[in-house]
Image 1: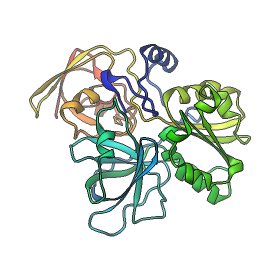
Image 2: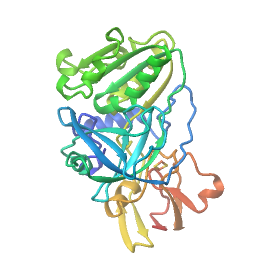
Image 3: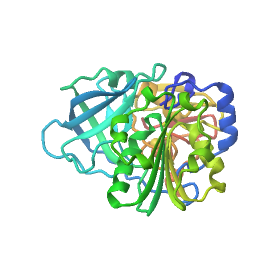
Image 4: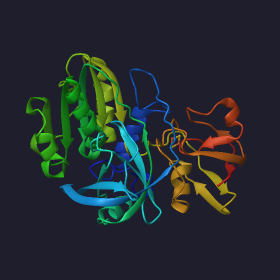
Length: 357
Ligand code: FES
């Protein structure tokens, strides 16, 4: 979810101020893994190219400015299986492509469910989703899973606002397995926090709903981590400041591995502006120092596919026809780097690249 000027909005839909972005850049530093922070592992994500035609089956408001869409296969029959943490690419009628976590029941092969917060200053995708009605047709790609849920005995789930979407199926799976789990759901106000009714049906001893307005300030990382059962695996999805707070306070907490997912594009650090020529489209573009080639290219070619936007899934791979590349990805081999680049993170080393797009 990226706001105008390339500044990502947070999951509550607020535009982040320049100063906080500077602090964020200082905290995040250069290229890094944002998942499996402590475990130091990465999970390969298999790109899924099949197109799935689906129909909107139901649209339901699940919080202020948040709708949940139930989808079914346009031709009837079962939808592909998925696991908690999975997402789908949604090709909207305008041609915009957006990614949304699946937040329904993986055992229900007849339906998918996604939930979307309307972002007034976003790129228009969420507003378009909010205009969808039952019977509207969409195309999906996936599901694929960049936030896999691993078996453990104890869990702490942390969800910020709409970040509850990948977490909700994880919580249900943990509860079904008989694991020891806690969930903290944060948000600006109680009314803005989706799926309150469903969360209320979970074990109330294990769920803490924490709206900022009722506590005065957003929760610190330490406050969130306090709720972890000893040695728990931590799964966190929320706005960048929430994830950053948890990461900072993690070393002092009695927890296991941290797994986290953020939806907004990570800030570009140490980048210089460069030119991109799209050979097949005949388009010349300028990529500013603080934006990715992917985000600039998608303004003209919204169908260009992407997934993680962090250089590890392989979805945005593009053939380079000419120009030297500063590779910042984590998937290409040295041999592949001779001919290809991941446009979500990699940049030109010589001021200009020509791409097979
Ligand atoms: S979108 Fe995943 S590597 Fe670029």
